[in-house]
Structure formats: C-alpha cells, structure tokens
Length: 155
Image (cartoon, helix red, strand yellow):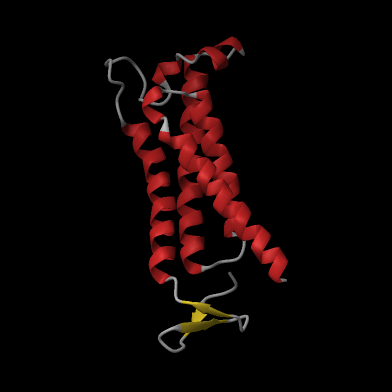
C-alpha cells in the first residue's frame, strides 16, 4: 500500500509507486473508521462513571485493581497509570486511523503499538463489559501484520 492514489480510470487506479490496484476507497474508509471508533471508545471509557457509583471511572475503578495493587501501587497510582494508558492508546489509535486513511508510511507500526497498548490496558483493567475490546485490538494487529508482510513481499 504505497502512497496516495493518483487519478486513473473508473476501474483501476495507479498509486505513486506505479502499481495498479482496484479502487478500495469504500473498504479503506470503513477500516479507517473502525480504527478511529476503537480509539474514541478508549477515550469515552475514561469519562464514563462506574455503574456502582463508586470512586474513579469505569476503567480504573478508583484504583481497585488487584494485580496493580499487589505491586504496591496505591489507588492514585493505579488511577494515573490507567488514565495515561487509555489516553495514549486512544491518541495512538486515532493517529493510526489518520495515517491509514492518508496512506502515510509507518501506519502499520503505529497501529501495532497502539493495539498492543490497548490489549495491555484492557487486560490490566479487565471488565466483562469490555469483552470485544481485546478481540478488536487483536484484529487490528492482524491487519497491521498482514499489511507489513504484503508490503515486504512486493518490495
């Protein structure tokens, strides 16, 4: 998936590298939108209150995370770590979506790093309501890996 597309006929388009490809604007827009939506969900979860009305947000649960608490992190440390992970992940996914839609080189690495952070944050702050999060992130990792492998074969 080289650079941006140059105008061509209705059926085929030629990208900057000279390879002819079928138009995939619809599919690429949907995939880019899904990447962006996953990033937005990470950000939205930080502003979502807990269903039980307790302290903290939906993700960090006021620092009540057994794995991190056992490492000696207090409630405030867990809150800060969780919020930072989710914000960095959200920003990375939104950047990945922009890079993917604009066909900027390196979007695969950005998406892989963001998806990995997504899986780590969702596993650390697990909630059964977020069951689709890791599934989506692993799917995005597969997309990035597949694109990287096909790019290397073409080169």
